[in-house]
Image (cartoon, rainbow, N blue to C red; front, side, top):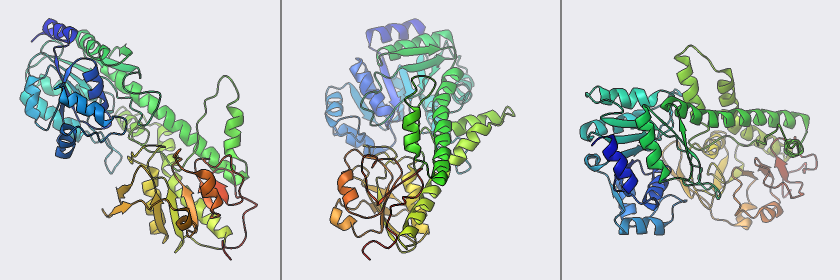
Amino acid sequence: MNYNHLKEKLQSKTAKVGVIGLGYVGLPLTMEMVKGGFTVYGIDLDNRKVESLLDGESYIQDVPNSMVADAVGSGKFVPTNRFETIRELDTISICVPTPLSEHQDPDTSFIVSVVNEIKKYIQKGTLIVLESTTYPGTTEELIEYELEALGLTAGRDFFLCFSPERVDPGNPNYNTYNTPKVIGGTTEKCKELGVMLYNNVVKTVVPVSSPKVAEMSKLLENTFRSVNIAFVNELAMMCDRMAIDVWEVIQAASTKPFGFMSFYPGPGIGGHCIPLDPMYLSWKAKEFRFYSKFIELAQSINDNMPEYVLNKTAQVLNVYAKSIRNSRVLLLGMSYKPDIDDLRESPGLEIYELFKKSGAKVEYYDPYATTFKDEQGHVVQTVKYDPDAFSQYDCLVLITNHRSFSYHELAEIGVPIIDTRNAFADIESDNIHKLGTGMNQKAAKVPVGA
């Protein structure tokens, strides 16, 4: 199959499209491709995911069961764990994880594994689009060069693009369809075919001159956020020391109609993007003997926020003549952002471990993320929502500001609360201690219940 043939198949929507990796990025993309009129083959090595999808059940909060069931039932979505399916595909979108190694270097092993499978089964004329977030140059180094080593030529025997995912789980306003999609191809024909595919899938496609530009654009987006969050986290620590309410400061500054953008402090950063993406860029820059002070400093500040939450809690407990050791601590929320069950890189996981290592008797409540595995591999389950039982804890630490939490009811329990998200902003209570405001001078000077 050549360029013109694939172009015709994309225009007529007779092309068989494939998505490798059916997680937070791949499954929503698959559903949009089905809506766009394509027959989609979803490949994932996790048999549990494949079986769930074949049964019409979704494991992604933003993708309803009915959508999966309809797609599978109509034959427009074919979940499988067989890489041999690549032989039948006209396009392949790669949506696999790209974590960091223990040494904070990019772990591209999932991409490498997929490329090894593609090398076995690829047919001439296939369009390949990498969506996994990674460092500039990955598309060429790990895919183009590998396929050209087989005697294939990009832009003639296969077509290659990079189009960064922009998934924001739980966002009520933006999804895969209405979030503009950047795409860059290794040749002009590659870009044209990539744009043609995604024009059927998303509302707006933004072509750029190369895969490297597309790769760098994704890293800029999230490094920008990482650096600004780090600055406001540092400002929160400064305000804590100076007994100034950082939340009120941000609110006041945000009234300026130009030249200011609000960012907010918190217990740390989570999700797949912000904690990881800047380190891809920093790592790659070192290859060119360029050392990014901003990125490294921002990462250090954000990484230390869980420890800061522990210290803040220790200060609050000290006001009540208690110590962290042997105190009963309840973490409120465990997912990395509100109203979802996503635990990827959640600062709550580290905070839980820090409290344990400090000798606290720590538990958590989260109506969405109901279980997780601790560092020893043990399954930890959420406690049930019970204000009477919550009153028996020495303190509550708000990690995730879920909208479903009854903040007034929690405040009325009377237990000291460390609020890392300004979730109790509208509640006047002596037992509320907010991150970035200094110590609550009205707090009781004796243990609760004494």
